[in-house]
Image (cartoon, rainbow, N blue to C red; front, side, top):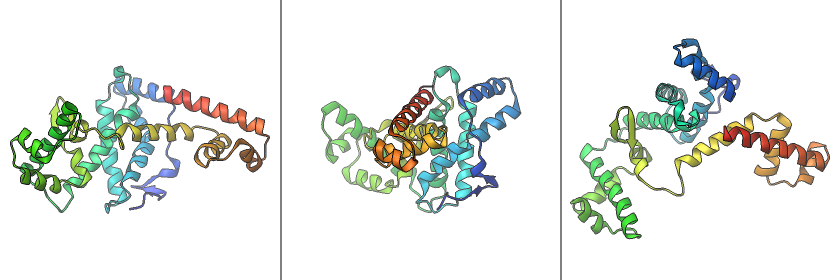
Length: 259
């Protein structure tokens, strides 16, 4: 699957709008008063977020247009359930919901079905492993996990093998008042935490808002490892100017990420 196409679902992705924080807040005020036009503008202003997320599914055989539509459903659900009083950025709240919506779609369209009983055993085993690891400060054996949940070791092995596909970690295990708890919420993964993905999206959004020259300097300095002198020679300005533009760019990015 390739998401590097200009038009997805009839939407020209190269012309998708970018909302400032002030614009988002203004639209939220109107949305809370029932303004449907503001709601539509807010959704359009966050379609780049959906586009960024579906790039995570490059290895999927699904049609990019289908994934974009499903991602938009997740975006709309996030908007409908978002609470500004919690002090959380909308993108931080929306990303897991969009990802969850896409993963449920992929799971439901997967030709390989895993029985509910096997999934239940696997999830209990995953949770027991996490609990025992925290309690004993070491990873438990398969027999210890089996004893903890009252299931034989062979059944646990079969169940865990059956859900090896990553989408299984996004299976909802509990829902209360519209707030869904997924398996991934109960598992510690220091190498691939969801917040790292959220931070990467926020950083990309911050960079996008920079003027072209400052964006180019940040790319050369921090993504391509060039020195200020090398950047100065390539851009055609003095090292002092590079230093000043770099500081301005970093300050702008920090202000965006703090909002």
